[in-house]
Image (cartoon, rainbow, N blue to C red; front, side, top):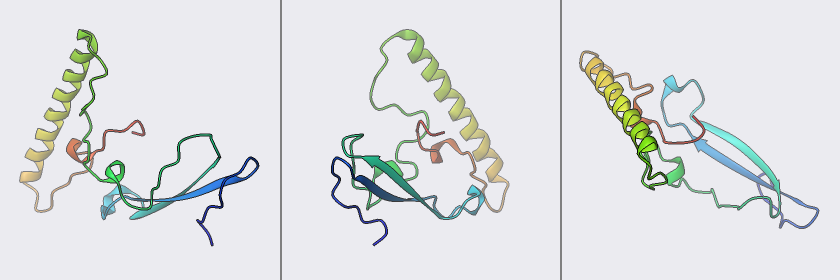
Length: 120
């Protein structure tokens, strides 16, 4: 059956099928769901069950510019992160202001709806 993975062995490759939801945003420029097949050999990387939507795939689970773990303690990086967060807040206010005059709000690139990710 497609998507089923045999037990990986020394010479067998594990195949994983992942479905990612982009929501019902017709302005996203893609279909509502995307199927991705990941192929790797046993021991190459940690394997996680992706049958259900987890926090990694929930829109807004960790908005752009939020850093719950403190990886930097130096003043310079903290100052840059604060400046980035200030700019994101400014962009958010501009989008909110623009949307007040629209009958249908346009939230494309609205920072709170963008997940904090290395894939952006």
